[in-house]
Length: 162
Image 1 (spheres, helix red, strand yellow):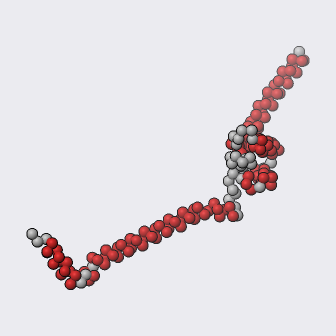
Image 2 (cartoon, helix red, strand yellow; image 1 turned 180 degrees about the horizontal axis):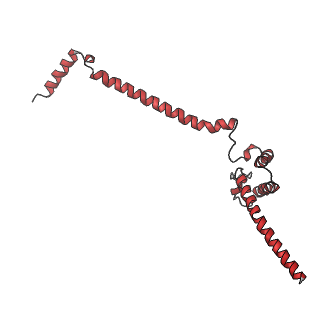
Image 3 (cartoon, helix red, strand yellow; image 1 turned 45 degrees about the vertical axis):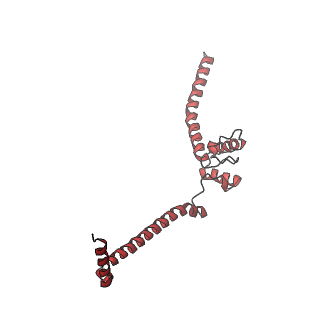
């Protein structure tokens, strides 16, 4: 009976241990995928590390293994990022950090959009002002001389005679 009890207790402990470690492994895997999504695979496939489908890619396998080991050790995301940047350089970033010169590169499209919109508004405003002044000047009675008015009346009378 003691062997059966020992086996039953061993199986129960193994089952409990698997229940405890399964969520931890899932959390580590999710964290590794989340962090790995911020890096590029360095094998010339130009894909995100966690999505590299390059057949026989040993680079992504090694990078993922290194990432999994760092996550299992409990390293912070910044420590993992710094380690990858030291090893592969800044080209490992899938998305450049939003600081320093990269911040300028991130903000330029928005700045260009605002400046372009303002330029279009100013041009349209000037066109409308010029068109309005041309129509306003033509409709004003002092803009047409009496001689031009008489000539226009004679022409209209000539062309409408039947």
